[in-house]
Image (cartoon, rainbow, N blue to C red; front, side, top):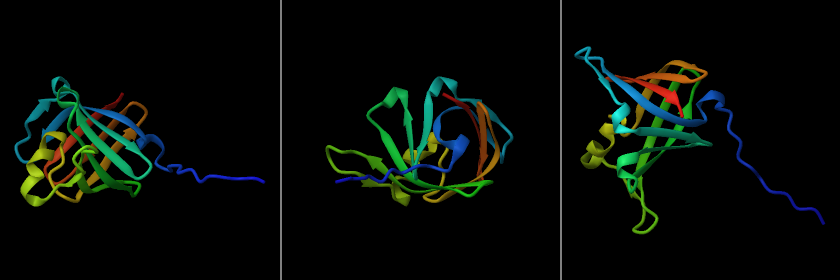
Length: 133
């Protein structure tokens, strides 16, 4: 008898990886903030994205995402908590995601650059610059 298993492979190419958020630019004010000291990471695999901050390793947020070529859509965020059950993020708890560069329950980012070791994303409020980790 032969058995087989299904594996989920991603077609997201350069996006699949762990990304280090190094700079955040405000589109409204033009101000930039060096984010390296915050040690914030975005990770992509399959259809899931995770954000975490090294300084608060107990907090992991998970999202569904869609890579539409020149657009990245991040949606359905929840606090990853296997001990006490995962908790969906709502409009009332959305502030918990702002330090990761997420401003909306469904956030659409234009992919301005995704080459080699760098990625630049832009939504309605921010431009986020990442380095591959």
